[in-house]
Image (cartoon, rainbow, N blue to C red; front, side):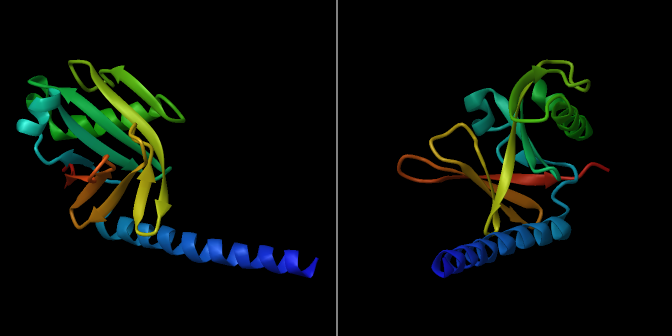
Length: 167
């Protein structure tokens, strides 16, 4: 009985020593860069990466541990104002309480766009969420940007998103 109790206490202590520093570090990053304000715009929007999928991609992190990725079709995406992107992402997360794919104008856009909404968690100094690939995606926060790390068969794909704060 003592061994079981000791094992449970040690397991709990180990879990807390791994989980809490990750949450604390991510929250410090949130305070430092205010990761919940505005949105993030994929590097390469309006360029060849966007042309390859015929969409610009925008991302927003929410304090309730949700991430939303908005796919706005080209050429319409080149005409959308930054504030409309942020408002569309905010409207999209109001439409569901869980994970979802939604196609709509979100009260801001004049053409249909698609949003993917997922819950995220903390792992060490990164955010982790399901992104439709074989393994979860991770987000590494930087000063004024984030890096989306998507697992690949051979290599990881690192995609930079620049932080856009609406004024």
